[in-house]
Image (cartoon, rainbow, N blue to C red):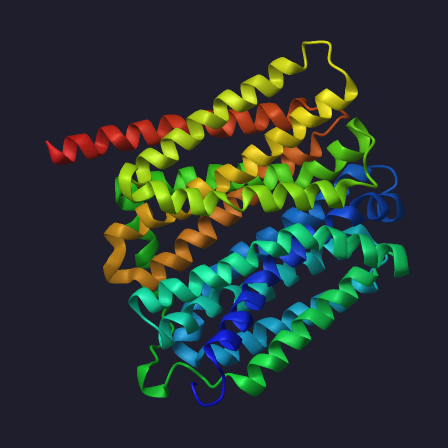
Length: 402
């Protein structure tokens, strides 16, 4: 690879692959009101399913893309995923019903799982140890900028050509990434290192992971933390629009929140070695319970519209920030006892937690009634349950040590 692609170019390409997911979700946020009015005028709230349907497809795809790339090579799986993503984008572009758009979004998510999951495998193939950690860190730093600018890009496309133009931007984005990879990046997994795809091995990995109490609990808590994040994402645009009447400025506020909450990974890196992963997750969930309870209590007090909006933006930032101090740690906790099946375990953890989180977030989002109640109570319940499960995990660890 060194004679064809510099390290800087490689990092940029990997960051673009990572960004497929964030771009596909966050750029759709400004389009939800128009899509709801055009395709589901009797129940505009159903437009939120455009987000969770994509996440559902991505979660299902995560089960298979890693093992498939181990069997057939990295580039063929990325090509296949990109082809499905582009085809699904074209179907959504010309859809005349919300149901067809939702089906296309599920297929989009399946396709997007290819570049997102396999990109990490490519990094593992070519680098190890601190070099790998450095490359992933830089790529993720670039990736954190995407949620900040995606709603702005989506709003710009809508202003120029309407909401269907966003699906054209998806097609162009994926085409650029896959052509860049095809022309510049050699296959990173030699034929002699490939392993056949075996369904029984995947099933056995699932059984092993859910039989281990710490792994099982960490996957459940990761599901709840991702459910919190997805619930906020599905409802944040209606909250800005319907409750606070700030639909026009939503992309700018979302960008500010995304940039501020992006520092969570830096704080986590500074504290996790000293405090430990379990304690970081437990404390983060405990803090979020306090913040969310305060947000609920603020609804019982007379406040000016600007003050109420400022409190919501602060709380939104705290929810996004919590994702940065919990998800990586929970993934590491689950992976620690599964070193003998690390590749399969990574696929199972990502798939199970993502699919279940989407299944939790979708019905909560549909409960939006013009008030904050569904959002705040849903997030409070998930954080409280996650906090209780983390305390239980601590008691299990104490018994093992004793």
